[in-house]
Image (cartoon, rainbow, N blue to C red; front, side, top):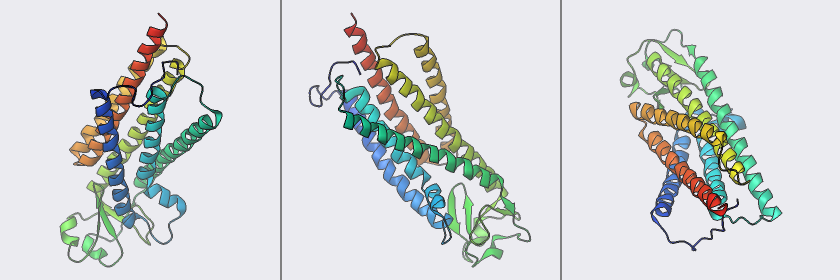
Amino acid sequence: MTAEPIKPGSYPLDVRQVVKIVVYSLLLVNFTLYIRDDWVIAEHTLHNTSSLLDLTRAFATTIDESAWIFLLILFELETYLLSDEPLPRARTLLMQGIRVICYISLSHTLYAYATNLVEIYGAVPLEGITSLCQMIDQDVSYAYNLVYTKVSEANCAALSSATQFVYIDPPTHFIIEDRAGLVIEKQLGWVDLIEATTWLLILFTIEVTVWLQDRNIIEGNVFKFLTIIKIFLYTLLWGAIFYWIYRAHYMFAWDEFVWIAGFIAIEMNVVEWRGEIRESKK
């Protein structure tokens, strides 16, 4: 970047920096919660014959969150903490390597979400089964709105009163759903895929902005276009928040809100950096 060097401790801890510290801390807390959730769901979706790819798909959210945390750190360094002096080659290569790994991880997330949707739409009707109580002692989990419950004699009647069911995993160890649950899972699958794609597009707009400002370019139609695109993309993310609240997935909604706040902090860094570039040109 071309702004004056900003060294830690050289500026007072103002309100904006306090907010950033709080937001980044909350993101780390959310990260640990997602690890726990992935682990709980994996107990129902993974089995002895699961492959390494199945394992990475089961922990797609954990992998995704890890990649975004590292990218957030990189953006914070690039837009706020680093000086305008050329970085040592080793440090530059390290940052580029981390960025490539993060992009690969995010690409894996898109793959996992897309594959999940394909499997959901390929759900197979369970013939001859009109009650969950017929599935007792068959190592079956009933899923509804991302809640997975082992079917047992004690809970089979209470879990669902439906008379038609589908499964989406191999018969040796499968997840069973009723039609209403399948509709919800399709909606959640699409929201996940759209949300992940939206974040990648937001990432692209920030990368372009940083690239331009690193070359002292701070004005032009491209910035207006990027602003319009970002408004649309962040609106989509708010739509995901409202949908998750509607489905009572409050942790998903909260996590999305905190991530939006985290990237707004990066956007503020970029705006401040742009102002410093503009001042240096006077």
